[in-house]
Image 1 (tube, one colour):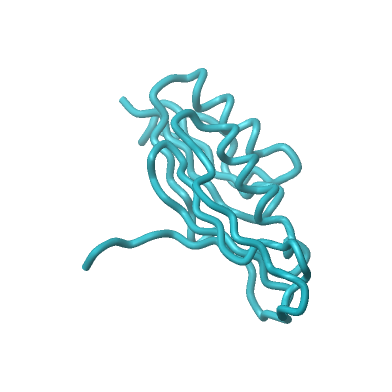
Image 2 (cartoon, one colour):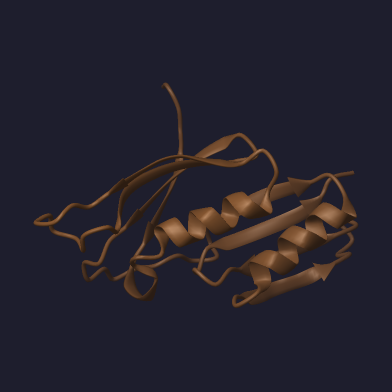
Amino acid sequence: MKSITTSLMFVGEQAGKAEEAIKFYTSLFPGSEIIDIQRYQAGENEPEGSTKMARFTINGTEFLALDSHLDHQFTFTPSMSLCVECESKREIEKAFHGLAEGGAELMPLNNYGFSEQFGWLKDKYGVSWQLNLSN
């Protein structure tokens, strides 16, 4: 096996927001960058300019993202989360509050016994995140 990469497909109400989301994610976490964005051209089966395939990193971990305007019977779900180990209270608070804006807190940032500071949320794009303060 060469690698495993998480792919985020933006569908339904989120279709067309892949590029916006990855710009948001890479702005929140240090060591993050957009590697490449390929866009649909006129005449292809998705709206011109929407994200055909994007590659980006969050703190060095590579992800893929794409838009699909087709009628899918699924979207993002909290049963699949991006788990982030943060190194400081400042880092976890900045990331959590940034991601929570326009989204929904599933477990507010707090001490739950298993971690001094942990939070679980769904961001404004529907992607689920679990943030934990490393000990």
